[in-house]
Amino acid sequence: MNNQQIIIYNENDIIESAFEYFRKKGFPYPDLPIHICMQEINKLANTPMDKLIRTNTAYNVADTYHKHRFECHAINMKSPLEAFQDDKTLKKTLYLTYKYNKYIPDGKLGKLSIINGTQACSNFRPGFACYIYKTYCKPHDVVLDTSTGFGGRLIGFIASNINGKYIGIDPCKKTHLANIKMATDLKFIDKVELYNSAVEDLDEKLLHEKCDFAFTSPPYFCKEYYSDEDNQSHNRYKTFDEWVNGFLRPMIKFQYNSLKNNSFNIINIADVKIKNKIYPLKDITISLASEIGFQFIKEEIFPLQKRMGVNTDSISVEPILIFKKY
Image (tube, rainbow, N blue to C red; front, side, top):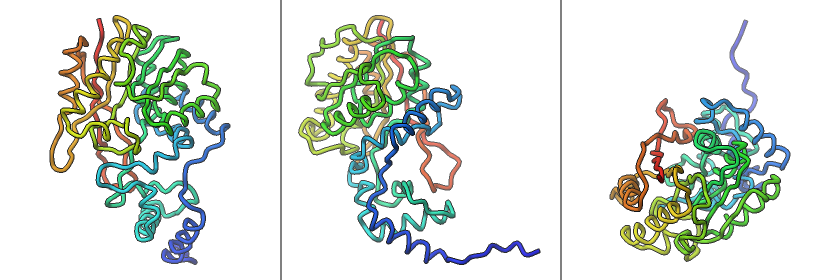
């Protein structure tokens, strides 16, 4: 019996047809209907704790509302949208997709993120956020997120079923409005309190001892560009020292003032390399938090999303710094 695979359409024919299709269709933004978003969150809510740490369940829920994330990029890199608009890059993306998957879908092209010269601004995985909330929060807790971002931690909070309140702060107008729309569509708007502001512009006593838990992943100095708005920390602070004293210190102080005693504060932050210089964000964050009054409890790891198409068993991780206010 001949088990040789039958090839009617060769690789080049498929890739060329896919290229024409995506050029006509445009960028394949995630676009889940509300009922699918709800089902994804239900699925995440029922994921076992040991699976939450690495699951990508419900990742595309927030991306459905934050389509502008695909216009954002790391320093000196292209955004996924810019990569898509370049014919050579798109064809390479389609080639890699077919090579690794043996199939090119009509939806999201994950390979755009691994093309040389392209680096997107990632969203926080809702599954890991859900894990953190379930581990550290009590029912009905009020949680604070000083860099709300693209909604990944908000989706994780909804799925955690803590049934408390999520207070989020973000300077980007598009991001703020997208989170309002997302919370409204998901019937969660009465359990969120969102501020469209840079955290350092808010009165540090605005939420004085109102919160039971704080959890965020702030910008990594000027590593990523989120928007052209003047209140973005990468636009406002031109040197590292200015950023540390103008953004990072006030952020941690705001968290401290907002938390009740005996509350945890968790910050996902890592050292970054920019133009061949390493900036020690982790150690500076620990030092600042201790100076402000937090006690550093321990460091855990946050496993990042595995980059599709990368032939390796290793998984990149980032620090999760755990502090407590006594």
